[in-house]
Length: 204
Image (cartoon, rainbow, N blue to C red):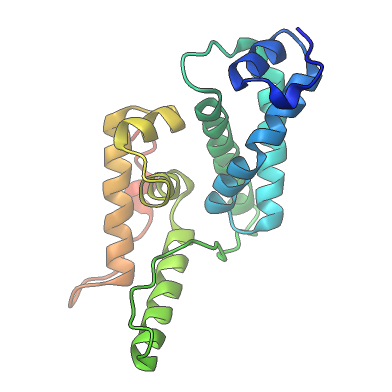
């Protein structure tokens, strides 16, 4: 199936054409989904260059696998799942080589009064601490936090995006939020959680 003007075609038609080997249709899918895919990658990895690498790898994997895409989920959901997996692989590779940077940019609502310099400074410090804490999460925990608290997906949607069970999504989100709380808002006498408990539970 070939399109004289693929920019006017429906996404489902483009997917069908791409599955049949239409390179132009796949290029149009890339054009339509790139911004959202890059935004997700940027949330999951440390900087813009890493995000571009993740997106490039995600589209390469998608291109190689499009023929096996069955349409059980939306194309965007399938692509985001691939992107999340690529981001996890990328971060794991960086961690193994001791080059993991902790400078992720995460949009955190600023609720401080606009005309209170002290409150604004406190909010800025809190934002920095929260961003650093999110960046330090293991990739599988960071992913659920980003998908739930930034993309506002529910547990079932997160499970579908990441290819895990809904129960695992709930467990990971609970662990991620507990770790963030102990690092950003530690209780009196409470030490920030180390990685060993979550990192030993790879099956969750």
